[in-house]
Image (cartoon, rainbow, N blue to C red; front, side, top):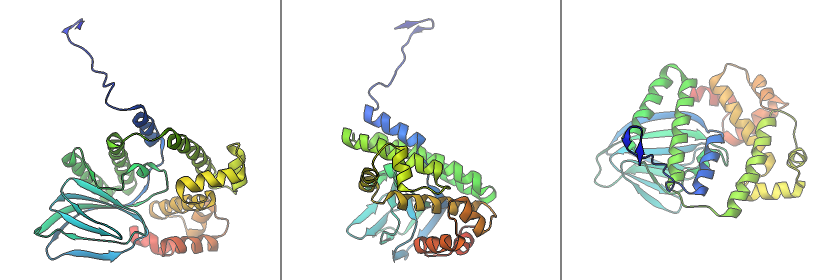
Length: 287
């Protein structure tokens, strides 16, 4: 069509995303980010392998060059360059150079995630990056920034991951209307918990705020997240406690109070039970 400049038209990309994908893009935009504990760029050479292990954080692995064999409990995956894989917390896994591969360059991110933060949209199967060179360059920027400004580096890497998740959403098929409705209800409950996690709240408080019966609140939340609302609340408190341990100089008692634990000793027991380390041990590990 003609414009004031001549023969041109605007492409509105109407068919690029479905309605479901646009809806999920909005959720990703508003969802909480994970806590990035560490990001590192490694080079390895044969003979090399990481034996079977379980760790208490989520492992995000990206292959820059060479190929990996990743072994999980019930499957074995071959990862070529430009591919990423999320290994959930407490998952038995090992990885090594693929047969015939003498060396590799790869990136490792250690994340603490909550159900339905935006990393929930990362697929269970390996994801092929749309623009791997640009993604890896920005990961290197994040590593460089971490050397001088860890807090700024975490924000930078989280926003890079948010872009990655949008890419994943664009690759995924539509979800059913029932699943989308469930996501909305769970999101409302999670938002209430996030706004009130430092207070003395109960499942009844959560259900009353969402105008639901307590039993119904427990049931729909357990079905969607595989944990109870109170388990989610404690996970959220521990996540914010971990952030304060790494990014602040507050003592353990102050951190416990700030995230809603009214007893420092109970906080320490809960923290050790979940992370298998004391708060002070965890602080030393990532600082």
